[in-house]
Length: 456
Ligand code: ATP
Image 1 (spheres, rainbow, N blue to C red):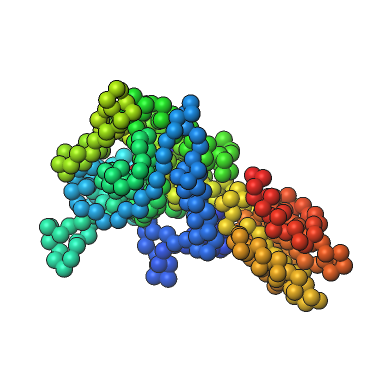
Image 2: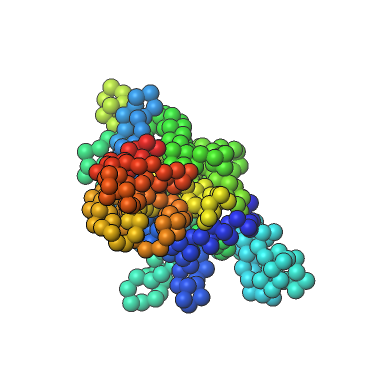
């Protein structure tokens, strides 16, 4: 994957900080590499992305292929699990990238990324290319964060912060089947934090050490796995386009031959062409029944499923799994990148053209001036809309500055109460994308907004 620096990423990072989308974690202490905080606008945006995913994948997923029925349920697993989970999954043994250390600068670099990793002593040169560089042989470096449970810090108390949400789902497969009246094909979905001690966190939030994932493990019979794989690959790709990643920057890339993980039968990545290069937002894989079998071996528990609808007497089998596994922070960054627009015809040229479902603030209500009875008309409109949608009331500064602030936040519509409102009861509606204006009756503001949100 190409990940290089680009000028326009700097502008996006600057807007994110200035307008409170994303801050460096612990900034007042100089920050901490690979960790990020979401500010007020970023928190709303990220929440909208997660809500859209949950609504569109779990509560109201698209119809199955050829009218096939399926069920979706949710899980919310602990971050720290029994370490045996990570032995069974292969993370304790194998979740590592070969690394080289530099004896001269004490830097540590991924062996496969040496030509993208600047030498800390001379950043214009890459690691190993500066005369003083003194690299070791490659060594394995485990990406899982380690901690200790209880008072004693010894090897019997070691635990790990989960590096993916998937294993919590596999470990609970039987619990879900036994406790909920569900049958296969069944998807179990989870959104939650994961942690990886990335050697070279970079490209803003794209490669972080703490990040959030949205994952589905979709359990089905082996024979049906290829159909469900194609279904989920296409559903996940079109979910991103439906939420505004409509440009040619979004691609679906099928993995071939050697690129496939040893246990996977098929895999595709949804990738986005960021200013730093084409990079993965989500992977969709046919993982076979590798994980459930590994947990059966390690735990000694039977994780097979009896399917009464197969054959004459039913069939017992260990289900295959289709896994759409995405990163919330990466998709938030893609939505931000796609929304970022510069319109030189505006006094403040930067605006964020978020899809209305994702926009952190759905509407703003402005009295043109904070007197002449205008706030008295504006406040009830604000109070009505805020019961349903995140909206903002602002009576300070010139109206042009207030519109510009809302453009930068990506707010689709603004309602302005002005002199004419008192005469004929109409307000100005101002549209973010083309700055066009029209007048509607003040009683129609909420309905107008809801029509706009439903239209896209
Ligand atoms: P990469 O090759 O970019 O490291 P990966 O193939 O290891 O990613 P997976 O293990 O498939 O990633 O994880 C599923 C998803 O989790 C990824 O598609 C990505 O969106 C997200 N993800 C993985 N690692 C990170 C990270 N360090 N920071 C942010 N998101 C991540």
